[in-house]
Amino acid sequence: MEKPASDVLLDSSPRSPTAPSSWPPEPEERRSRAPEFYGFVAWTTTYLLFVLYILWALLPDEWIVWLGVTWYPNREWAILIPSWTIVVVLLTYISYFAIALRATPAFNEMSAVTDSRNALPSDEDRHYNPYFASAEPDAIPELYDIPIGVVNSVLYYDTLKKARARDSQIPE
Image (tube, rainbow, N blue to C red; front, side):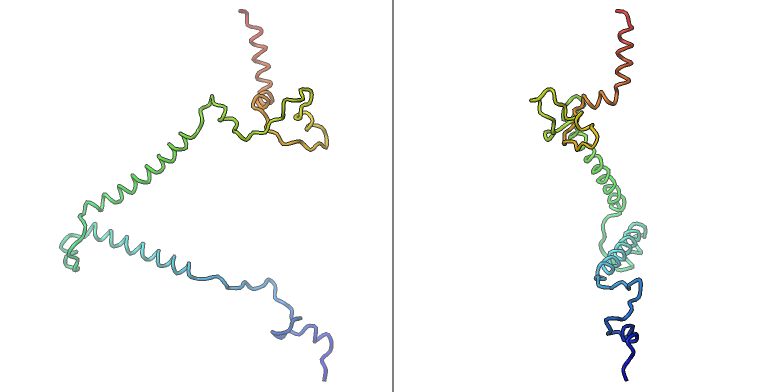
């Protein structure tokens, strides 16, 4: 006896290519679990070493000898290790700050504003200004860096205008 066509199309057996799939699809577990184990070992080791460090720093000598430890570092290292660690971290921050400050150009140097890769329009055609040409509607502007003088005149036009008017009113 043959199955009706609707039963064949909706066959839900695991091997059927027409089986309806569940939504959302189940995530496939293909990644390695090794990082989880390494993380657990690192976490456990860190806590174990911290507990040993605290015991070494705080237990009396008699108790440590009673535990069977015959040699251990001097107790002054319990203070020196954290102190030196803090000093090294602070010196690292200070060094990076000093390097960044040293690499910063002075305010009066042109390299503080521009670099060697600037792209300015050529001075060959004095009557053509590409900055004005790019302001036209539907224009695709050419790629140029805007000179600092143009930026300052646009940003501080009102301030410069007021300063010039004030300077022209001052009698000499």
